[in-house]
Length: 348
Ligand SMILES: Nc1ncnc2c1ncn2[C@@H]1O[C@H](COP(=O)(O)OP(=O)(O)O)[C@@H](O)[C@H]1O
Ligand SMILES: [Mg+2]
Image (tube, rainbow, N blue to C red; front, side, top):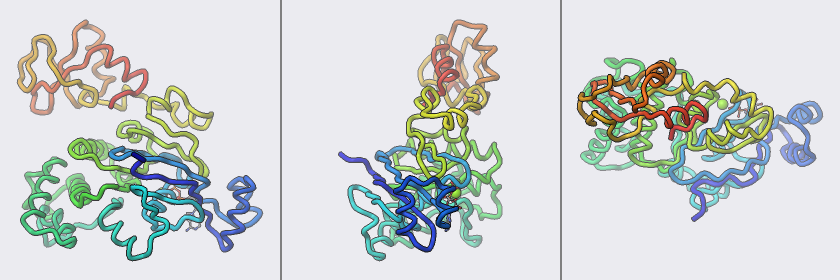
């Protein structure tokens, strides 16, 4: 079976004479040379990607590297200057406007950084709203909305009004609202970038929980290294409109393709990136019973950074039990697991 989403030799040149721009691109001119010699801006150059069904694929790069241009060509908010986009082997680049509208409605949704909740509707009605519009019957729409709210962890505010919610909770509503449409592909352009770090981590967790519950194909743009490593199945690193490397976080960290990628990843500190809960493995530690508070060893908290549990891990041969926020044992961390994560960032 071929990949869910295929980008084939995609290029984008901004400027008055696209043909001349493409010619400059074919001659191998750099972004700067193109700008100087012909006043064309290179958006992206000859991108080839295959994204699998159910994959959480992160596109990473500095500002101006072409991430938004690339992702917008997937649903043709931007038309490519050259190349093809295939979704389930169907060529999106050849579609009529009418077909495109259908695809955007049913198959490819885009999650924006800011979104407005309807103030006069309850939270659950806000989440169900898009489904009503799409013609889903009321009872079923509400049921799906309820499920989505549960997955993002805010069931208890289903009947509240938006202005009764904190900013972080409103963000979760936005995520639930995007998720509930059940489009197969979700495009998220820096969707969490404006959030403060704590809420941002919570949103990443919520997204991972959603992704666990029902696999969607997600193309997630980020300029934040920690975020990318934390959530990605695979990462594409972009610079100056080109993809420099594609791989799992571990592959890229262990084997950076060039100096640029190496420099980009040099600063990542896994001990401060991941929490005990992120890396806890399900199962039983000696003397600890999952789902209860019973344990011989004092458990570490799921929200502790690895940095903070290192002293504990160093002083015992045994696996450390990990307790969730209610104090129940959710899993354990053994030394091998801990070392593997610290050395190579391997979490998933
Ligand atoms: N509509 C446009 N017209 C001209 N240049 C553009 C346009 N959109 C983006 N660009 C240029 O394309 C390059 C890539 O931009 P963008 O895709 O927004 O990068 P990123 O999302 O990685 O910050 C930048 O040099 C930007 O200035
Ligand atoms: Mg952008």
